[in-house]
Each structure stands twice: as structure tokens, then as C-alpha cells.
Image 1: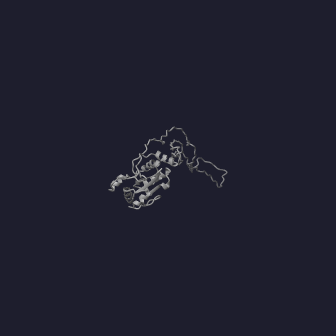
Image 2 (image 1 turned 180 degrees about the horizontal axis):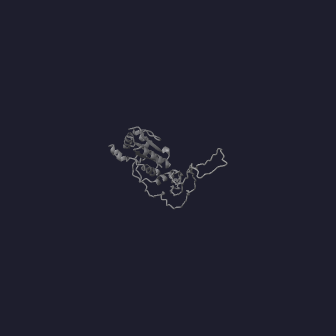
Image 3 (image 1 turned 90 degrees about the horizontal axis):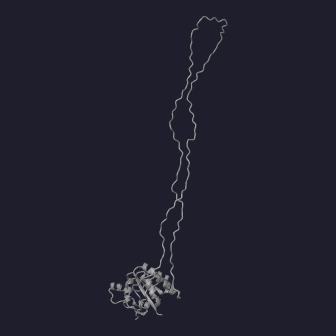
Length: 275
């Protein structure tokens, strides 16, 4: 089956990078993808401005007024991505390119003041035909390139909620013992002793027949009381720390995601006349 070249113009490198990445992810061979810009990274080379022979060699024919649109777009910083694919894969490649919003060739030509419409060459360049892009299209392209008629598949994932527990420090209770001094007062009775000496005359007539003229001393001690302070300690109170645990039930609310599939029937594109 004759190969066809699908062409898209992207105004940003990000769009072009994403389109090339998705084409490769859909198993489009890297050597079937060419990228053309003033400083094109990766595949492809810089397109020589105003050299229609470059585009003719790419498309296998003279793209006529298309070449001027491509040249002017490249000069203004856009990137041209061209994909060579068998005819049965054209729709898939177009879908992938359309996912990244390429430039409408006719509108771009009108903006440049170029007359005429986008023409098709022997390899039928497909430009900005509106196509609804789907993830299933990329998957189908991958399956077709891998060969066989087994079809493609897409995986759907779903999140599940798992609730665990962890210990969180909510604060500490501390008991500190300190000393408080309080003035106290008590009344106590104290006794003071005083020795008094009295000298008085003897009464009566007392004769002493055996007088002892020797020295003699008589003593009496005075005793005073004074307050003596003593202290004793006794336990008046006990402070106990105890931790009690209680169980509670808490409702945990969150959202979980799941993937679903939207199935869309895409009619085949009408055949494009080749010139």
C-alpha cells in the first residue's frame, strides 16, 4: 500500500516535542518521523527557507503553495512535523497530531497573504483537518504497528483508601516540686531565775559556845529559759501522674480516583484524491 505523508505545523517546541513523543509511544518508527525547524532538536534538520526543492524531496513531489507556508512558518519559529505512514495508519497518525493542536494550514496561508488552498501531492499531505483525538486512537495505532489483528487494550486503574495510625505528641504534663516559705509564730512561756541576797539582823540573844571561825561559801545558781526552735517534716500530700487511654471512632474522609473508558466510534475519513 502506498505510504502517505502527514504534515502538521506547531507554533511551540513544547507542542512539537509532545507530538513526537506520542507518535513514538504509539510505535511509529523513529525514521518515519521528521522534524523541521530553524534549530530543530532530535530528529530532522533545519528546513532551508524558500527552497521548495527541500519540501519536494520530502513529499516526493512539488507541494506548490504549501512550501511557502512551511518556509514562512519555520522562519517565524514554528516547527513542521512530518510523518510517513501506510495509508491504513493515516487516521491514527492524524489523531495523535491533532491532540497537540497544530496550526490550520489554510488559516496560516491566509494570514501570510498566500492565495490558493492546501493541495495534495502523490503522498497526500494531510494538514489541519479537525479530528477528535482519543487515547484509544493512539493505542490502536500501537497495536496496528505491532502487527496482527488481536486488537489493542488499555488498562484502567482505581485507587483504594488505606487508613493507618501514627502516634502524635499532643503535649506533656509536668509536675515540679518547689519550696514555699511561710512565716509562722507561736507563744512560749519562759522562766527566768534570779538569786536575791538579803542581810538581816539576828533576833534574840543567841550565845554561841562552839564558834567556828573558818571560811565558808554558799552558792546558788540562776537558771533562765530560752526558746529553742526545732523542725520536723511530715508528708501532707502525694501527687501521682497516671495516664488513661480511651478509644474513639473517627470518620476519615478522602477521595479516591478511578479511570474509566469512553468508547467513541470514529468513521473512516473519506479518501483524498491524489494528484
